[in-house]
Amino acid sequence: TLCYIWPLLGGYVADAFWGRYRTILVFTSCYLVGVLVCAVAALPGSARSGVAYMVGSMGFLALGTGGIKPNISNFGADQFDSRSVEGRKKREDFYTQFYMSINMGDRK
Image 1 (cartoon, rainbow, N blue to C red):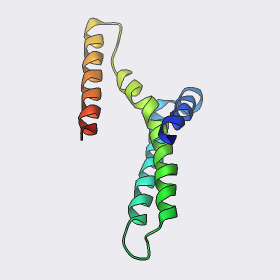
Image 2: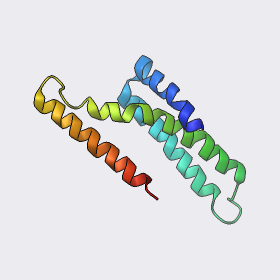
Image 3: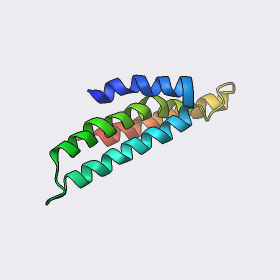
């Protein structure tokens, strides 16, 4: 559930302070740290740690997701000029492909 609470912070930070690009970069770094912590914590042997795994997944991964989710689709749409018919069509194509790829990645 933290992945659904942190986007409030991610959207606010992007709008009020850093902008979308910098917010995406910083929160992607948090996400990558979370992946690394989870991977190391899941290794067999002395590196295995349930606490580190929880910190990585519930802390860094959730925070990283919260900064990426509210900004990435808007950042992509900002690349197109919505004042022209061609720009609106390209933006529509972008959203179609963006959400199709997300939904294909979510299929089980």
